[in-house]
Length: 373
Image (tube, rainbow, N blue to C red; front, top):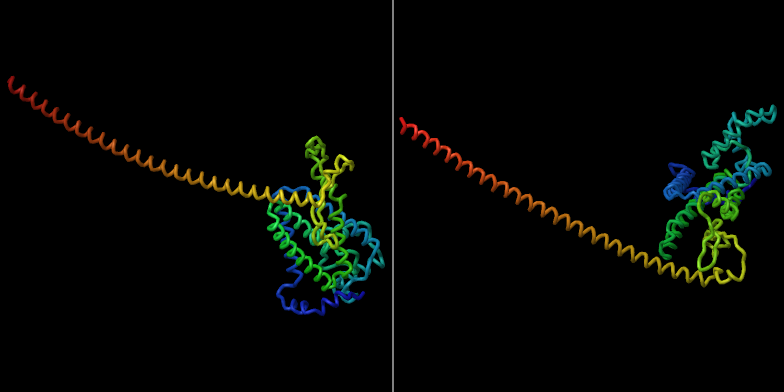
């Protein structure tokens, strides 16, 4: 089938400029995606964030099941055409499918093939390189994986800088979003430009991943699984009892047309009554909360600077005390050496005097003996 978006990308100047690269563009995009995945895994392991990991794994599971259902129910012709499919499969691949159509495959052989394809798909994160089928299915698995990883990385960065000031937080999130969107755009362009998938497969994977990742049921299941051993009893405050959050979903700023609703939404189960009307979250309360948060953040920053100043002062005092202690130890060592030298001198003088007295006594004894004789 003809893909207008593929023809547009092939005829652009960008495709001509990428032809002279020593490495294929797919290698660079895969390298960037792998860097995002590794950074995300390191961050989740470092902070021991089991809930986010469970949310990502559960989302990937739902997408994989949906991919299997669509692959079973909907099959499209290969995006590269019959000639490209022949080159990709090779003689052995063509013989395999012809044998399957003519003679059929046994149950054991089919199960082994499915297992090997599953392992390869997990290892390549949904990228079939080289693709071993002469057909295409809705939706693009590699693009869906890239979108999922980018969403997880964005939420991880957002949670990491939750206590940063609003201006700095907006700048960091904006830069992170631009980098992740650039990686995603490169993945989409290469998937369509290389004719691995139709543009409808790639474009359908983006909103579908957003919908599954932001689904409240998925968030509740992930929270229930990750926090099943934690204490989730109701909290009492000002005479009111609040049930614990059942989960949290995030709406990203790039979710058109819901960009103005971007933020974190906490899922709760309670009856809406007049008692809780004054606790309803409004824009005014949101503005007051942000102002108080900025004030508290400023106070915390001032306390941190004060603590840092006190720590520096204490360290300086410790250094001064250490230097004074060393000086006193040196003075004591010098006094001990002087006292020892004085004691040795006095002992030497006393020894000399005793030696003189002994010599005088011997002379007196000898003189007395001569007098007696």
